[in-house]
Length: 223
Image (cartoon, rainbow, N blue to C red; front, side):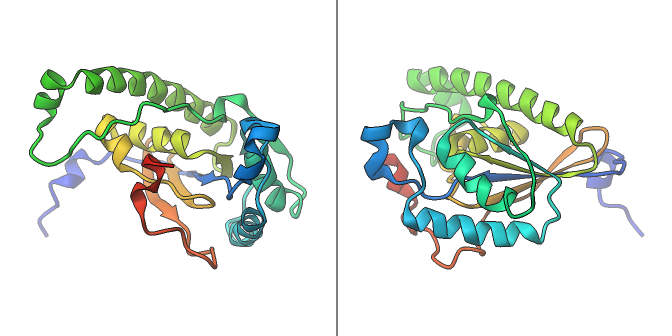
């Protein structure tokens, strides 16, 4: 039987595997953002419902460790699951949301990577910023992996940092970052072998939510 050429490139992996679930916080109460500030903004009524549905789904995954950012919405989302299973929430400021205010509509079609680099100053600036963000998340992922070898880990954090985790693993540029959407209360899954080889198992699983996210993926560019 002829071998698939991919088999020659595939690394030899070793167990035990570590599974890391990247979970975006549930819907926050944006009406309280001005009063309390971004970091203290709690979940909305819809967000609390999402957090309960998320906790139910995570119960099936045999989670060993729980991490969350310093922001209230991430910790509150985590608490619905962690409190039910008497798990400590490890709060880590390195998981806090990443500011990405400079949204640029860099087109994908009819634009090669080389042409983007030559003609779009904004592309070069944003891509350098993204490189730094990806280095940050690679180091963070490495730390969490080494602290939890062979375990199942739930990380409750934010859309932009999850996009940075994922694009850093894929080696994607700023166009890949801007093309990726991460829904509130969604689960993305990484599997890492004992030597640190990483596979992205899924992105944006939200089948546990009774009310699915809005279909307009461009809403985050205008909100």
